[in-house]
Length: 231
Figure 1: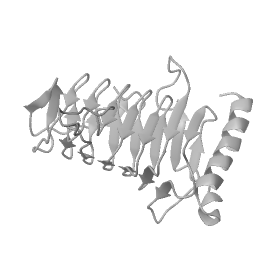
Figure 2: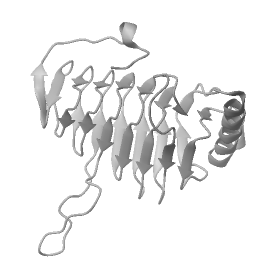
Figure 3: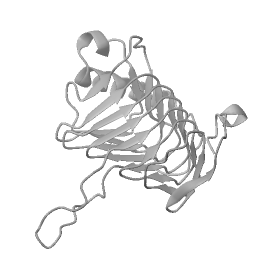
């Protein structure tokens, strides 16, 4: 990171904190963002922090520290149009290329200690709740909707958004997807390239395939020596 990048990051972070938060929170500078992040639809109160310990840089957005020298564009986007809301309950590090869309009064909630690798995307039109201690690989997608409405012969929408719930201590492998209506229990791993589409009932399991199913139970995982590469 160049000296110019550091200066521009500080300017962008100061601006965003003071747009979103009341003065007593904004002065703590809880969001530290890259100047490459594009912000859309944000206003006072569109991002909330539910924590008794609000500190400088507790929410990192758009940087490449988790996976150094990422190949690809360095742009990120946070889009909170039509009263979409984003809630943080603690530390989060959302890496370069993150795309977050929360629209139409939808609520996207992050727990504490969230680490995403590069180019992850979250599309929320109803409700997505993410627990504590999550770790995500490259190119993870989370969508509680299909992107576009589908109508039946009576012109009624047949594919309404459905809530997603991702538990604590969940590892989403690179290129995996969590789709509308899915529930990922605590301690689970979603395998690389898998598509989770339903409610899974067993904690501490490996969920894999397309569509994904539980392929192994009673597992535990640790970030261990791979903390900085998030495979």
